[in-house]
Length: 339
Image 1 (cartoon, rainbow, N blue to C red):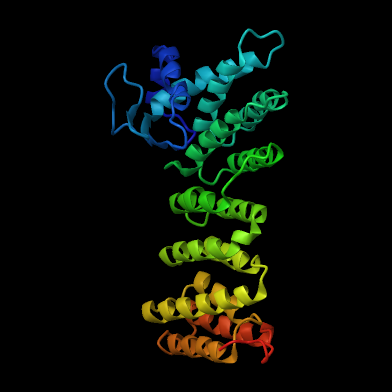
Image 2: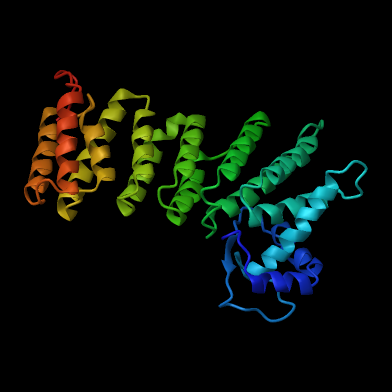
């Protein structure tokens, strides 16, 4: 959502009392069932609500008019400012609610994110840490990252806050399922905002927690890549997941299987985009690909190049992939390479 305010919106801000709006919107995140993520979207002028109705909610779906969110943001900003003053009467609960509204409006509000960290720390440093507060915070952040909010899904501040949360999970011996998070948080954010490099960078962070899942994660991500074949960020992570497979024989099997499957689909659908062919060339050039498989790579590359206008951008991608392999391919050990 744009941070610019038009004259009509500014006029409403001056004439209406924003406190009831703030009270309603700030409670949205305080009443969410465990393990359920909200799906939030913003409404423009074309979707006016009845007077006194500040948002719509059906199950986990929430729709908030831009005007109402701006009104709530103005109140939340003042609450946080007052909370930061010494001897402030504002308590932790109210400060937490205010920061939720601030981050809903502005996902790069670093002060709000850091305030939420400071509010969490005292709960975790007691003799009996309130680990439920960590789960609630993760639920809040994941709701923002996976909702239909264009700026939020790619927010460096929110992804950084999530990394901090996962480190707290590890410190307090709380289990996190990286495969689940990659499928349900990373991929959702990747669908909401294509080429979502912060999201897929976070996926690497998750996989590093549990590298033994690399094979399973690679299978999951392959399906995402095939549905989003022009998104180089997910293909890049797929290469990373393959490299994270520690067992060389299993890595060889997965490399070979993925290369042949994706080559077949690429030939059938005549994919000539750079994202796919950077992945194919990098995989084909590894020592885990046999001569026969490499010849299949070259044959399909030449076949597609032959039906692509010469010197076009797509032709250069195909030609560049073949030339790159010629210069960088690692010749497999014939005693180890499979067919």
